Length: 432
Image (tube, helix red, strand yellow):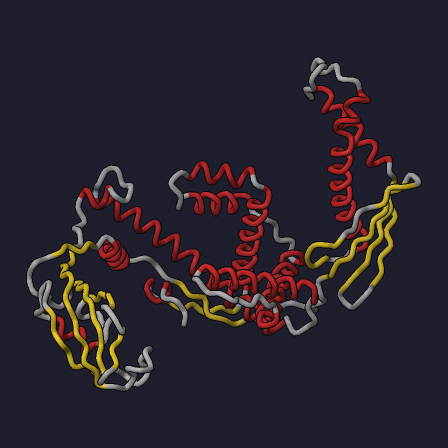
């Protein structure tokens, strides 16, 4: 194999690789023989199909597959031979096969030179937390609230009731809406509706109609009413009281706990909370370590194409989220994401460089543990595990995640990290 390496920019390389075509022909020949033993074609008995027919039927596909595999393996050989560290995937046009040679050109960016990386000098806080019985109590209460039901009643509305109303507002000759009524609902005391209106609903029953005096705030969403004292006519359509189920056997069984026993349910809730806590603590640690690494060692030039690709990914994800929330005319531009993309690329490359320099290897046991942990959140864990095992892309993504967590843990064990104890609730509370 012949390799020629050229520096096109400070971080881009163009590598030309030539290798004997016999490497391709030999593998293709073996694959065709394997296919001939098992192939089924109309008019031929299995194992008796002429080689020429096998070549005509399967040759092009097999040759293409083998050529792709050969390019990938030879590229890996070439970068090891030339001692280069690619950053991201290479761009490789269709290889040429002629005159007994396979030749292709790969263009790729390389990992920048970070110099000495002293993880023991990094300083940061490592948050620790545990799940307490009170956290389980709180989650059980949340689960009860999520199963809340509203039962219609015939009495007058009280604080805490759900009241459905029809309204219209008048200001001089202005009526909003111009015809008919606007429909709405509020839980009295929640302030989902203007407090001045909501408090005046107490004591009203189904069918009651009353004119209320309401002062609208200056920033009210309807400009004609903003900052005005308005007459609002309200009519009660329904009054419903809250029903929150008790944590009894039926309630517990509804969450898939067949025994219906509270102690078993609490154990499952604890396991779920501990799994969430573990993931959140790792995300906090990852963000903290990444920030320190980038601030200390990430000031060098980053591979521009890799940064742009990451920015486009961030832009696409953000745009998809906006569209899923009903937003229209979403602009999918990478420009606003260039800085966070650079930070993410820098963190990933530095973490990868630390792993390479310290010969850190992927722990298969940790991969299995993480896969089982992910699978445990689904109704049929075995099906999820099988999905990962049969999908190379899913498994590769999982392995990348686990390897990153291993390196983060390795760094944290050696860095100058102080411990910060936080409650479960504080850890899980979204950061503003």
